[in-house]
Image 1 (cartoon, rainbow, N blue to C red):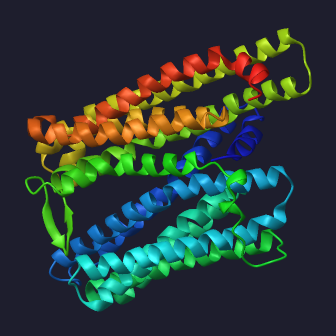
Image 2 (tube, rainbow, N blue to C red; image 1 turned 90 degrees about the horizontal axis):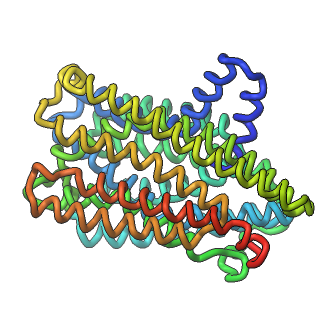
Image 3 (cartoon, helix red, strand yellow; image 1 turned 180 degrees about the vertical axis):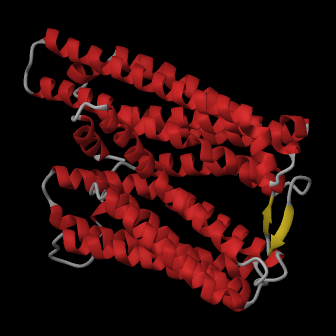
Amino acid sequence: MAGIGFELRKILSRDSYTATLRAYLYAGLISSGPWVLSIISVMLIGILSLGVVVPELLIRQFLVSVTYLMAFSLILTGGLQLFFTRFISDRLFEQKPEMILPNLIGVLTLVTLVSGISGVALMGWLFNEPLLYRILMVANFVTLCNLWLVIIFLSGMKAYNRILLVMLVGYALMVACALVLRPYKVNGLMMALLVGHSSLLFMYLYDILREYPANKMVAFDFCTRRLVFPSLLFTGFAYNAGVWVDKFIFWYNPVTSDQVIGPLRTSLLYDLPIFLAYLSVIPGMAVFLVRIETDFAETYEKLYDAIRGGETLKHIFFLKDQMVLAIRQGIFEIFKVQGITVVLLFLWAPALLDWLGISRHYLPLFYVDLIGVSIQVLFMALLNVFFYLDKRDLVAQLTGLFLLLNALLTWLSHMLGPSWFGYGFCVSLFVVVMVGLHMLTKTLENLEYETFMLGR
């Protein structure tokens, strides 16, 4: 999300209720628009296929295939997204734009090889489905792995409106192709998915090729040790794996899941509540962007500009207090808005499930997941602050702890029985947020010492 604060500050500078509302709407679209568009498009494909793609098990096979493609592509590239984004940011700071495009092509080449080889190996080893389905799975996997890197790259270019516009076009094309190809059953829907994501990838690459000049086509400078931060590889992997590990435990416990296609399993018991719960984070994500990327980011820049400019210690201490206040207010506002959202959904949940035609037996798990995903928004805010303060080791420790706790506590909840389902995810996030707040307090207390004495 680096750079979005500039756009939000421009909107908020008008100092009116309309400008504030516009800023929150814009932040909500930027933070949640892409994944909401993708979810709506895939679900719309499933709905439009009803009565055409029969039996309905085939539609379920498509939806489960897409879920696994998303999960594995995010886990595989999560570390590289952070790692490469930092590399690009440093090169821009050094005013070396000629290094950007060749290294992007280099990292995409590497990702294509790794995802392609691993995809072919898994499809050949674990699946006995028709060859065309396996080819389409590998092609979609490679495309998604490349797409995540290109989108994160465009975010660094601050091309947020372009990202949303192209996504709207790409996913509309995906749905249109699904309408044409749905008579070809699962393979037709998988082909539509490939067409949609491939169009997104190539439209984004076109924008990047126009933006950056290059003296050569491919480079692998991002592999040079002195130019990169390997801890970011672990951080990105641990965060994405931590987000998905509880789902995998539910999927591969025979008691809580069903086999759908090949080795791919799904858990209706767990998947529906967590899916609905994640839709509740949109207000919290909007507040997170507005407060952390405007108030905090602005005070952070002023503080370090003052340090580099040789301002008086009294003025530096004043700016530090302003930054700490911005952090506290931002976290409190996220807590307040997301808390109100949770309370409202607690009250409306029975009627919401009835309207969606979902059994009220899902209510207890839905309540737990609602709290869990709301805490996750706070966790993301904390990680963002730590990244601003360049505390890469602390972020790696927190994400590693999240992955470990979510795996262990979710497994323990399975041992304890259905009444405890969902608590592994929720409690693991609560623990890492509490630890993160403690770490943040200590970091802010020692900020002057580390800045002046350790040169950070």
